[in-house]
Length: 296
Ligand SMILES: NC(=O)c1ccc[n+]([C@@H]2O[C@H](COP(=O)([O-])OP(=O)(O)OC[C@H]3O[C@@H](n4cnc5c(N)ncnc54)[C@H](O)[C@@H]3O)[C@@H](O)[C@H]2O)c1
Image (cartoon, rainbow, N blue to C red):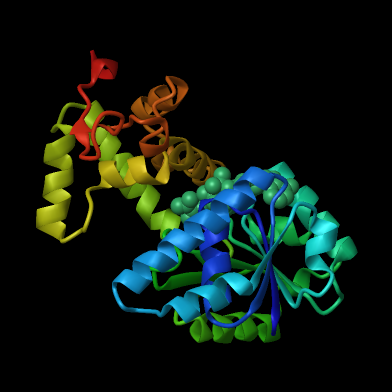
């Protein structure tokens, strides 16, 4: 494989493009927004500068990484030569279905179509195409250049050959791939989200406060970040939508999102990206605990 196309240049897309380009692949980065593409190149440049400062790469390697990335605002231009397409567009079922129909129609027949979705069924996405054997989940973690894991998700019809190719490719990027089957939440979010939801329930029921809950999990379980702060970083709207996928998919009340989470999302408190979630990020870089008027 030489030519990789990344669809979506947001948080994940820029990281995925960065990692492939740094490992010598030719990367076409596609986004409908020119601003997102400009921001992505800027972010990749800054992340490479940080690596230079830590003496992990040289100026020459930075230049070569950036030279390996070309940006496009339409899918047609960006996929003509693709061996692999990694879709990292906004997490929305209808959008992803539409993108995969278009990719199947226009991408070279040999191309593998991967998605970085956190929770949408790979089998459902694959069913939009005439190459379900070549559709697979390639779930990178945020921030992509740093996090080692790639959760490789086999859809119902994904072939052994394609799974092996993606496992090998992930290793060649210096990542550790783990193969899992396609059920709601896969493994990462099936285990993480109920923990986050339980932390929110504990707050909602007044068992302990924000900092107390996070401290117990940090110091008691050696988690680098408490579940409430992690939820803020992921985005509370994203947590809610993944819990809804688990709840709908398994029809099991244990996945029902906590009413406090639902209220916070409705109130626009989405975590770091909105400036406030369980902590306040607006005024200082250090997260301040938010007092819970929602509970009164
Ligand atoms: N953010 C995370 O921590 C994280 C972690 C793992 C997986 N994911 C998954 O990665 C995917 C992307 O998430 P993100 O956080 O980078 O989102 P984001 O909102 O930061 O970026 C999404 C980008 O997709 C672009 N886009 C929308 N429609 C498009 C189209 N038709 N063609 C091309 N580009 C289009 C948007 O302009 C935007 O720049 C989602 O499926 C998400 O579930 C996110």
